Amino acid sequence: MSDFPAIPEGWAYLDTAATAQKPRAVIDAIARGYGETYATVHRGVYQRSADMTLAFEAARRRTAAFINARSAEEIVFLRGATEAINLVAQSWGGTFLKAGDRILLSMLEHHSNIVPWQMAADRVGAVIDVAPLTADGRIDLDAVEAMLTERHKIVALAHVSNVLGSVLDARRAVDLAHRVGANILLDGCQSVPRMPVDVQALGCDFYVFSAHKLYGPTGIGVLWGRGDLLDAMPPMHGGGAMIDKVSFEGTTYAPPPARFEAGTPHVVGVLGLHAAIDYVDGIGLDAIHAHETALVRETREALQTLNSLRLFGPEDSAGIVSFAIEGVHPHDVGTILDESRVAIRAGHHCAQPLMSHLGVDATARASFGVYNGRQDVEAFVRGIERVTRIFG
Ligand SMILES: Cc1ncc(COP(=O)(O)O)c(C=O)c1O
Image (cartoon, rainbow, N blue to C red; front, side):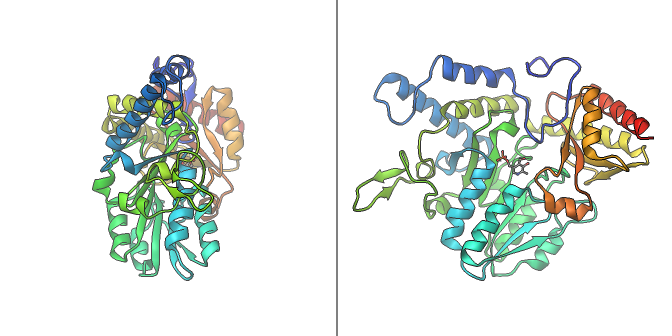
């Protein structure tokens, strides 16, 4: 707990799926980045800028090693997962999607993994198919297998659902996509902070995540793409740093990742991401996964005893528990819990199609991080009991 200065004693922060609190190591790295070593990267001829460039590129190598990318050149620093998916949808989609091609998504996707594909599909006349879920809230891969055809050019799925916590059998999803010749993008926003991720072992083509859910700063995220795919993709933004040569007769572009990083990057954000990766690796992703799984199990067991409560998602959900209490709006649940110093999220969680599928407008969601413990589960369950008392 003491690693996290913004979590006061007695406050149960259960909204890590929205954004994680920051460990002191990350805050210190950001403070050092602005307060001691600050300069821009890739441009300065003076020592400070050269040193910052080294630190910036070291963070890229660290990020590559963290997810076992083949090389640091496969790591593109962007504003977040949202921008990363938009880049793939616009740049890869604009190049490789044609009229009549199909895109396969699932019913549980975050809007960030729906809307960019709708925009890309509209532009070229491609069609989106939506994979259904199993009764317990996983992406139904048997259905995916039956749906996929050679017209499918891309499959884009959440590795872990931000609402249900369900974990995709990513290896199988990759095999199914590749069997029909489609590429596959995995949205790793909720998996990267909670389980080891090895993009080569997964065999996927694109993987995206946001630093702020991984205990790092906001405003920085990662697109990992297979080198040959990134090489074949045009830039999304034009500007400084992404060029090879500029003239009014015509401009040539830098190779990836610079091609996709137009403008002055979020230099200090990248240093913060490096510190965040060191922090979670120091604990170990296996240990984090086991810790959060145990907290989810305790939470689900306690909630199952309340008969007015509906639990969503599978038993073995990763770090995330969504629920609804009969006759109580999730926002009221959240407000009453807040009075008990328990912070949860209530709403559609940027997953409106999933809400429709579940037959609700919103859910309440508790999500865990490295700083949570049994005391937080207990405070949460006491808070829920209070909600049920208040609403009779
Ligand atoms: C599964 C999933 N995908 C995508 C996103 C979008 O991430 P960001 O807003 O950091 O770009 C989120 C964030 O809530 C998420 O949980």
